Picture 1 (cartoon, one colour):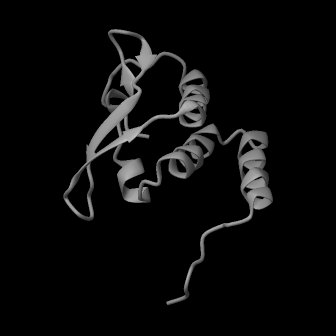
Picture 2 (tube, rainbow, N blue to C red; picture 1 turned 90 degrees about the vertical axis):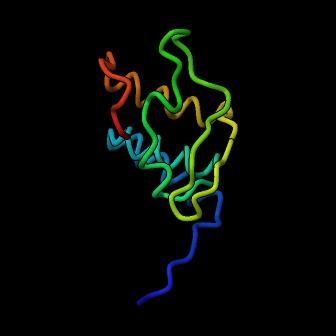
Picture 3 (cartoon, rainbow, N blue to C red; picture 1 turned 30 degrees about the vertical axis):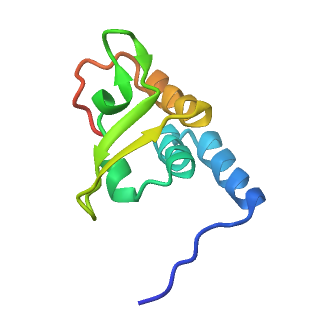
Length: 105
């Protein structure tokens, strides 16, 4: 099995984000931005629901998210910073009205 290294260059990260935005792949853009800003594992990001990150009663993104990590089983609380919220907002706008709170990313 080949070893995979993370992207460490800020320019390459910016290029990847611009590529995803330019190609209209807003979902993957949101996933990349969320991963970069939360340091979550991919398995944890993909298991998030809109209910985890968005307060439907307040009609606003949550400031903190609580999950149970798939790999370790530990509870984790993390901040949704401005960049993460902006990425999620782009995805939410592209989807339009979200009818249910259990839609997975």
